[in-house]
Amino acid sequence: MNTEYKIAQDTYWVGKIDNREVPFHRLILAKGTTYNSYLLKTGKPTVIDTVDMEFGREYAERLSQFIDPMDIEYIVINHTEPDHSGGLAALASRALNATIVCTAIAVPELQEMYKLHSRNFLIMNDGDTLDIGGKTLLFKETPYLHTAETMITYCVEDKILFPCDIFSTHVAVKKLFSDEAGFDITEDFKGYYSAIIHPHRRYVRTLIEAVQDLDIEMIAPSHGFLIRENIRKYIDLYDVLSRETTEGKKAAIVYTTLKNNTKKMANILQDCLKENHIETEVWDADKNSAAEILSSIASADAVFVGSSTRYADMIGNLEPILQEMKNMNLEGKLAAAFGSYGWSGEAIEVIQDYLNATNMTVQSTSEVIKSTGMIHVEFPIRVRFSPKDADKVQKIKNAAEYVSDLLLSAN
Ligand code: FEO
Image (tube, rainbow, N blue to C red; front, side):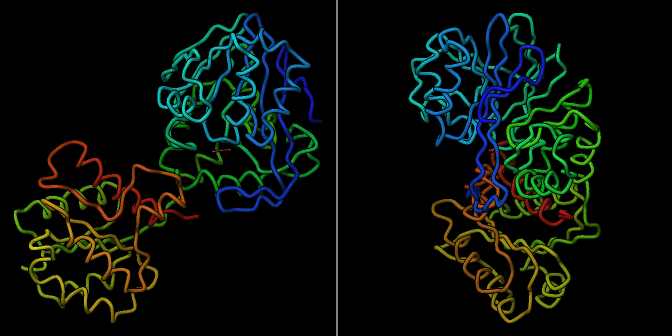
């Protein structure tokens, strides 16, 4: 079934089935996957998403047998990751009249990835619509589902949602629709959610709001099964799974501060953790006893340790506490280093080294990127001088929200 397949009036699946054991995000997709691309043969023919870059040329050649690429008016790219945008270079080189439709963030990404600097782009903002000649497309921004630039597309007349990664399954389907699968796809659906979407579950709330007023008769995602029965069940699964939390989590924040800037960081962390229902204790190591602080650390699920930097090192009474933490069994706890600095912030790195010498799970930018692909969350949390600017406050909040999500995640 690697050819066109009609799913609605003038709307065709034109994707690619990949039944290999596909390596993906450090997983092996044992059941393979599909890259679902759609062609809407309207007055202004439109393609929605393409296929993995490995199959780009094959895809464009097959599509050329079904429509003259020079007739394609729009190519919608909901998400730039190459398993969906990978056919764009081959398609765009044939569809020379096509305008590429995507979010503002996606434009430079697609230009750089596929050398498309001279092509026409049409930027879609949340709620924008596009007349494609007999059908209307509505666009909603859904950042971080799966990466920052992502949007979803809804065909108003056909009531079809094209959500790209969202509501997908990683199964190399022989039948397109879930109701033709011959088995219950729920476990595959939940497995995909858990592996790909759940790390971004904070953003699923945005998605649920975005789709709640849409009258959806079919979900046509870009991996696996299309869904036209029990649609509400699958949306509700995302709603429920993203809301599930583990109750009663605690955090301890320990710091020393030179000019109160690291103290301000501690307070921002505390406020954000509390907003996320994490019970939080804050300790100035120069004003509280080590025994009291170590007791708080022992009962916490996450530990933040921060210091200002002076003469390339930590200040105050922090070091004996970090020394003692190396001797404690802190397994299962999350840890993060933070601090304000003026020049290089060596103290923050020294704290990171101490935390790495414990058996806690220490947060690092590297691990965040590898596990979620998110690049707006940084560990250790480093702020130069006062954390008073909005972008510095946001940086601290991003880290606190990330830790909160890890603590509260029930999956
Ligand atoms: Fe299916 Fe985020 O790629």
